[in-house]
Each structure stands twice: as structure tokens, then as C-alpha cells.
Length: 145
Image: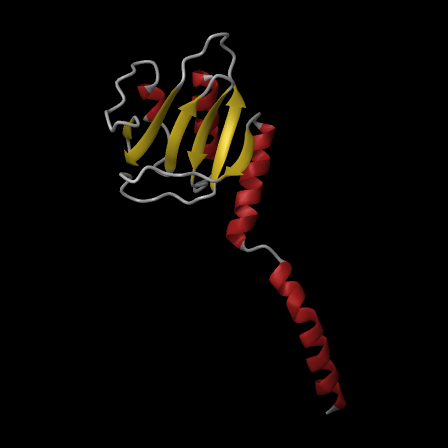
């Protein structure tokens, strides 16, 4: 009887430690973010005000993967993915930029937005998939930077 009481007390004391352990999805995201850092991408969680016309509202805050731009006078643009492979600008006009569109079509379905500012190019992504997806994202950001 004493053994059962001691085991019960030990179980009650150790049970909160199980809650501190990250879940499988959290561990996968951490591994993905570390691999992105190795590939030269930076990552941060950014709160976003998404356009009301998106069919499915992406999460906020959302993971933003970015890298610096190289051009001296870079152009600035933003495109949102409304359905897989369908990229539109803020006025919901389809992307027709021949330099950008082929790269955007290689992005995964859970890539929500790609924007190019004066200093960096960023991708807002749902972080689903394996490292092959991360390799394609890195290639796109490198090509458009």
C-alpha cells in the first residue's frame, strides 16, 4: 500500500513536466526554422491584417520568412495566393509579371503572401510540409531578391 502512495505522489509531482514538453508539430516547426536559418533565411512571427476578400483567413501572427534584397533601386510589390497557384495583387488583379509569376507558381499551397520591400523580400507561410518545401521557398526568395 505504501508503494502505491509513493508512486501516486511521484506521478502527481512529475505530471506538470510532461506539459512542458513540445508537441510533435511544435518540434517540427522548430526543426524547420533551424533549417531555414542554416539556408540563410530569417524567420519571425508577424501579426497581420489580412485582406477581407481572402477565401480563408490565414493565421495572425503568421510566420514570415525573409532575406535581404540585393538591388540598389528594387521594385516593391505584394501578391496574395487566393487558391493554390492563383496569385493576385491588392486590387485582386492576377499577377502578370513575367519575372515574378513563374517563381510564385512553385510555392506551396499554404504560402499566403509574398511581398518585396526596398530592403527585404518576405514570404508569409503556414509552415506545413517537409524540408523539400523549404528548399523551394529558399530558391524563390533567392531568385526574387
